[in-house]
Image 1 (cartoon, rainbow, N blue to C red):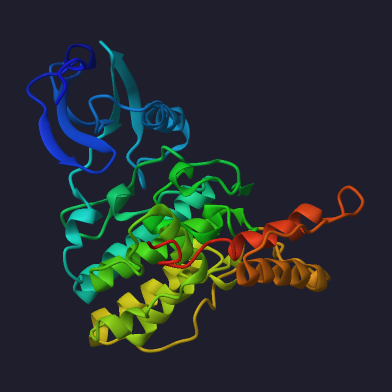
Image 2 (image 1 turned 90 degrees about the horizontal axis):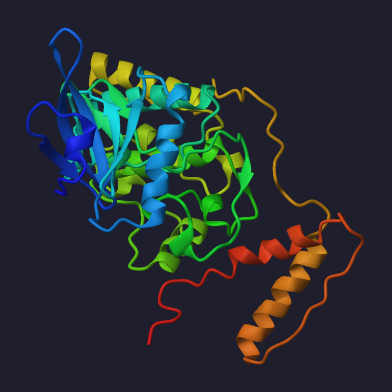
Length: 362
């Protein structure tokens, strides 16, 4: 641990090293308030002693959201400390551990459902505040020792814009975590990023919790993109026989490729998970029921599908297939008046431009 920030953070005692993930280090620190009382806080630092500008910017962005984050469902930022070339973000402290540390094996059904319900409720509150988190994953979920309360953290790429379009940048530069990223976040789906993108990431997280493994495995960024855009996961109940068909169906609905086919709200997810928990607590079994009966969008969501452009899209795809088959370059011209939708038609190619696993293998 670098000690350069210790003098300026105002510590009372020695910091306790808690855990580290790919990007960050977490410490429990103590500070003395007026009256001599000592209080615990959580300090977050970049994992690298030579952090990138991007990792520092994520800490800064999380601090900028401090007035919009509620301690009931998130670890609230309190202070951004800079000193002697180091930066630390100080958060309110809550006793617990990241969900990531609890996923070495499939979780017991009751423990899983209590955490899942609490997590869905936290996301209800998150989205009610106008946030799209864009990085929901086990490392950003703190679970209390009793296992029935959670706090969200890791708001370094969160947005307060209800809907935004992700450009098709190289996968290495897309904000978020590729293993838990919604297809539209990759920029290859011709769809906007909104609160339903967080629900896909929730689905990946719940899949991981009930099976002990991710729905997809990949070895490089482009392969991760292909998995989310084009591959269908094996249902959790197929991987782990103890997972009920109903829980499996809920998770698979969250993992739908297009936002229109997922749950539309975290409220709908929470209602279905609470019903599963009630069944489990009373009968140690989960009854099958229709999904998303109470999943009513709180705002108008217009499907981002292209209508009346099937012929043009088919022509582009046919030209692309011919180039792949013949191996010779070709040119296709797309013309039309400004605003007629030329870019949207061309962007439909992004889905097929993501190569399947092994295409570039030597």
